[in-house]
Amino acid sequence: MTGSLTKKSAVVFGGSGLTGRFLTEMLANDSRFGEVTAMVRHKTNLNEKLTQLEFNPDNFPAVYDEIKADFIFCCLGTTIKQAGSKENFRKVDLYLVDEIAKAARQNNVTSFTVISSVGASPDSGNFYLRTKGEMEARLMKNGFEDLHIMRPSMLLGIRPHSRPLEDAGKILIKIFEPLMIGKLKKYKPVHAADLARFMIESTLSKQGINIYESDTILKG
Image (cartoon, rainbow, N blue to C red; front, side, top):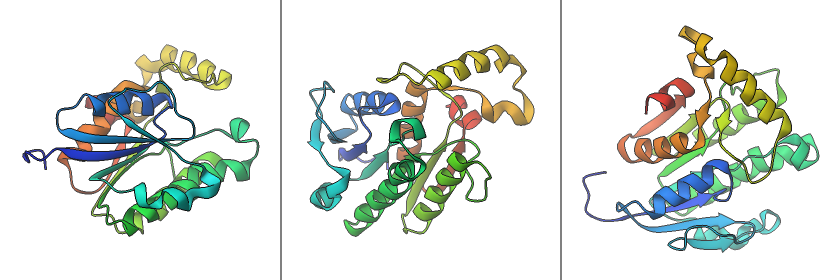
């Protein structure tokens, strides 16, 4: 795919978030891409080279026809505190992601890249990790030729909205990071910029169903 002279197109969901901001900026300045669209709830000060389209998750069918490109990147993610309840959390991190994927397949999109989490499993006893695992399982059933699932550990970077518990976790992880060797490597924190860069390169260079843990992402 990287050898083609034809510029690629991409649609990004969650372009105003921590990783999404890095991703949209990189895509907008990547000579391999000619058209980049950021799907956002409210337009913001993203790169002027981008096309921004507002969408309302409660009226998702209104943007069905816009979910078409060579590559779909999904950086959506919230917290139970931000969402207000576990069910509202699932509406974003599971149901909305699944809706986006289904719309993409209906529009004959063959490549989908999504951010999940280290430890994601539909059988997990942890609500967050179980939801992420269920999301992954649904995506695998959608029939994408190329599916790229990112499983980063704690993400480093400055978020538009502070997450106090996550910020405290980042401090602790940085303290114990030198001890994260062997099987613990996949729990090392990843900077959002490194994740965004890895998402682009792996999506362009690899085919099939791929799951990337934090240690693989860190290697670049």
